[in-house]
Length: 168
Image (cartoon, one colour):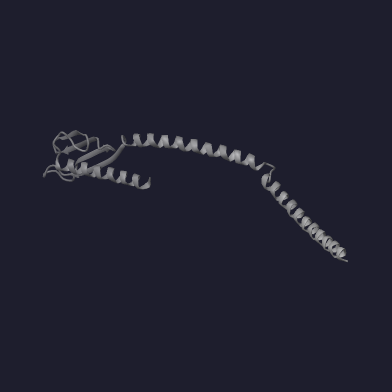
């Protein structure tokens, strides 16, 4: 009698284990199907191929960034030697002439090098002067108007450089 209970228990356990194996087999089959779909893209390209393509694209982007940095450095160096500051002051040089026909113009690069040009207008004659500027100053005596034009140009340079550093 005892042998019958053991045999029934073992049979029941075998049936339960068989059902458990069927469930596991179904889940494994489903998981295998999902894995195959994951490893192949929608157009049949494998995940490995996609990763290799992405790695190549990342390397191309890195190369482009390196080239852009070199060009930016060259542009930064070149930009300091371009005209960045301009100052203009018009004035009346003589009491007997009307309007502000005389002027002083300062033209400076990013290193505060350039020239201050002045034109003095008179009824009988006009004269023009040019004075070199190095490091924001001149070795020649500057008139009040020339100094004002130079200050305007320096202020423009400072504004340009501040806006550039603020955007970087």
